[in-house]
Structure formats: C-alpha cells, structure tokens
Length: 356
Image (tube, rainbow, N blue to C red; front, top):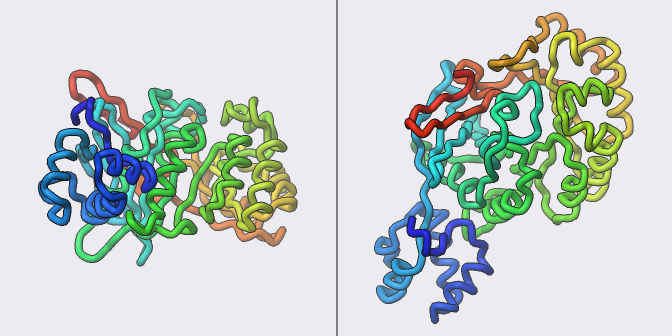
C-alpha cells in the first residue's frame, strides 16, 4: 500500500463522507465505498462499477484499501476450531480463531501484537508487547475469515479475546466495534459482540458510557489480591475491589450481566476457600461465571486441576445457587484455546506459533 495514500478501511462513515466531499464528490459515495469494502470485499477501485470512472481514477491516485494476508490456517481435530495466522503490512503476525458451535459461528479477534499485561497463564502475555493494531488491522481479521467461510455460513458472534488487551488499545477497538455494527458494513448486532478485559478500571467505566449494547467479560481468576497479583500483574494497579466497583458501574449503567472468567489452576485458585470467596464476590454483582480449566502453555509450571477437582469447585458454586458452567476451550490441539495464542516472527521469515 502506498504510504502517501489514505487507507479507506477503518474510516467511519462521517470521516469517509468528509473525504469524498473534499474530492468534489457527493457524500453518498461514502456509503457506496463502504458497501464495496465491507459487504462485497472488493479492494480494486476499477471493480467498483457503480462509481464514475473519474472518481475511480481519483481513488487510485489518492487512496488505498489495506489487505491483511492469511499466512496459514490450522483446523482442530474435531473441526470445531480454525486458527488463522495473519501477516500485517509491517510483517508482524497475529492469530485469530474461528469457533463453531451448532449454528453459532464465533470469531475471536486480536487487538494488539503481543500484550503488556503479563498474565502468567497466558502465552500472549509471555511474548511481550510490540504494538497496537489499527482499526483496519482488527477489521481485516473479521473480513479475511468471513471470506474463508464456505457456503452460506457467516460469522454470527465476535469476541475480543485474542492477542492483546482490547481496553489498552481502546480507541481503535471501539472504532472497529462501531464499524462492524454499521448497517452499511457488516450489520453485526451489538449484543453479539463481547469484549474481554483483564480489568482496566478506568476503561471499564468509560465503556459503560459508550451507549453500546455489547457484552463485557472480566478475567478475574483469583479471589484475593495476593493470588491475583501473582497471576496478573495488572492487579497491583487495579486491585479486585477497584475492578469490581468499575464492573458494577458498567452493569448498572447498561443493565447487562458481566461474565466473570475464572481460569482454574491447580493449587493456585482451585481450593475450597477460593470457591467460597468467589461466591462472596459474586453476591454483590450482576454476573455469571465461566469456569475455564487451565490450558497448558510453554514456559509455565501451572497445571490444570484433575477432573474431580474441577467438578468439586463447580459443586461449591452450584450449592450457593450460582450457575457455573465448565468451559473446556476449543482448539487445544492447535494451540488455539483460551490463553494459548502467541506468534513470534523472525526477520528470516520463520514463524513460530502457539507453543513452538
């Protein structure tokens, strides 16, 4: 893509209207362009046949539409997950995951290349942080995977649970969400989008005021500050009381339940007293819980609890009248499960993914 060209992908309707008007075109050209980019997946201006030839020439001289290349894809043994490796314009690479559950087709999008949060149970956190993704790079994952789907299947749900912390890349992530929900783009319903966060309290409060009907998931994973700080260094900055207060504000402002994600790790947060404390924390919050048995990653000594231990933890929650489904992550065999995404790209062109 020409560095002097403006990238049309990632511009919202108002930005695009202003741009086309600056080129002497009526603002409805913006809607036509968005249809070509997001609904038809066309990036060649000459193929946009409902645009005047003179305008197509203007676009070719001053604009581009970025394309993010799918380098590889890996299909899980049960055919319920596909992991995609995307090459970004600067050569960096990120992973995204497509998951199938009956009629539900969910794409898990990355918001950063790497992650600065340093969660000890997460492969992305262990690779470190390199840079934020642009709105266009976030959208390209969705559009690229949608194009790969065969037949009449299409993406029904979006989760921002891939590489990176979405709220640490707040503006591009929110812009991507709003673009995905536009009728002139993909028309994704806001309620079918979930943003997962480690607990950046100011951004949670800000998200509550965005006027969106998206869902929120909080990666909690411990019931004491000592345990959570060991697992998630961000807890030193935003301890449990602070993130739960911000999350409660979000639930009250939106009227929605927050989903608490609890990665269960043997001997760390799977004890009876952990379950009992978790019940106490949940008693003051409009929430639901997902118990996620730890998915093993390289460079970690953590282990998944035995099946009996997982079941016992769930039984304590159930006895206290909390619905606590156990979510065994899809795609474990292709390192596409929760906490397993990681890419390292060398200048030699060699790529290592997952637990490589």
